[in-house]
Structure formats: C-alpha cells, structure tokens
Length: 112
Ligand code: AMP
Image (cartoon, rainbow, N blue to C red; front, top):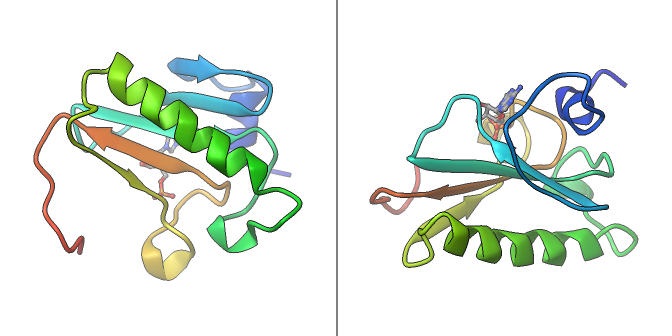
C-alpha cells in the first residue's frame, strides 16, 4: 500500500518524531499551522475515522492519552485542539487516520 504515513512508521521516509510506542506514533507536521502541530497516528493502517470499529478502537483512547501527555510536554495543556479530518469533503489529504494536536495560539470556533 502506497501510504506516506505507513512509510513514516517504517522509517522509509524521515519525520521529526516526538512520541513512539508499539501502537502509536507522534511526529511534527511538515507544514505546521500552529506553534505546536503534532500528528498522532495509529501504527495500524486505518483509512479514516469512518473506519473506527470495535476491533480497532482501543488505539483511539490511547492516542488521546498520548495527546494529553504531549500537551503538557509542549506546554499547551491550558488550550489546545485535537482535529481529525475525515474524507475529501472535510479536507483529509492523507488517507491514514491521524489526529492533529494543535496548540500555542488562539483558535476560533466554529472551525471553517
Ligand atoms: P489532513 O489534511 O487532515 O489529511 O492532514 C495531513 C497532514 O499531514 C497535513 O497537515 C500535512 O502537512 C501533513 N503531512 C503530509 N506529509 C507529511 C510528512 N511527510 N511529514 C509530516 N507531516 C506531513
């Protein structure tokens, strides 16, 4: 499968990793939109949030645990946003489930 995030997991292309364990990888987004912009991904290839199910969902809670930990490490725990774009209409450009951890600036709501 030609998946850029699977290649990052397999160290076939470089990334700036900030977290790694058996099931989750975190790395800096290559085009950050906030002072802190980290991507958290399951190592298992899941196309998007639309494909989370009872067999693969345990990694999702783990990703949120990691996000909370990283928000403290990167000093944004007083205000951050976690976003997952799902599908073309929502602007998902990489078809490997990922959560954007964004912090270090003000955010508006509702998001555009
Ligand atoms: P999305 O548009 O929600 O699918 O988010 C995909 C994100 O992946 C974008 O913010 C890109 O900047 C980021 N991205 C794409 N390629 C890489 C890469 N090789 N290393 C780090 N981030 C990447």
